[in-house]
Image (cartoon, rainbow, N blue to C red; front, side, top):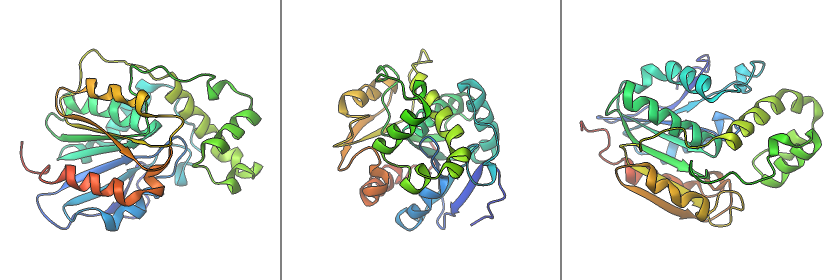
Length: 254
């Protein structure tokens, strides 16, 4: 494992078999990339596990969060360039799923043939309308209570005003981006897409995610996972089984 002095990327697990593929993971709004450390032992030996750290986390806690999709996507692409030149797949959850989709659109042009699969969890498809009212337009107290109802953010953080001064700007900015996100592209992807939703998720359910199948020319699937919006944490083994099965052989030359 490399030291965490890389501003953008944490290498959680190295592949020990060749050929190998990198799984590049994007957390939910305000989420720590450290949540993917628990995946290390459950992934196949030919998978390198990387997690992306955006502003507002770890050694980037004091950085200003992004407010614009185009700037965020271009900066992320540039920061990941060394990891995108070889075979890789993206996994993103909620806001992270939207970002991973946007990155997959860019890598199709900049690194053709290298993005082998896109895993999307708990995120509406680009054509599905965002539910209202917008969280990012709520008062601060209303926003915090909405976070509490959603889950994912520990109560000890939500109840700590000092900690929230550090974490709230990035959470709010990324939820705003997620809520305002829409279909920005004319053509579908040309890679397999695996989308996953939680059976009891009140936010991103089957109806809001079924449209993902239309956003790729290749295989598109929508899988139901037990659990709610944060099933990637409560039902980790099922998620990792799906990833391992879909990445089998994906490192081989196309």
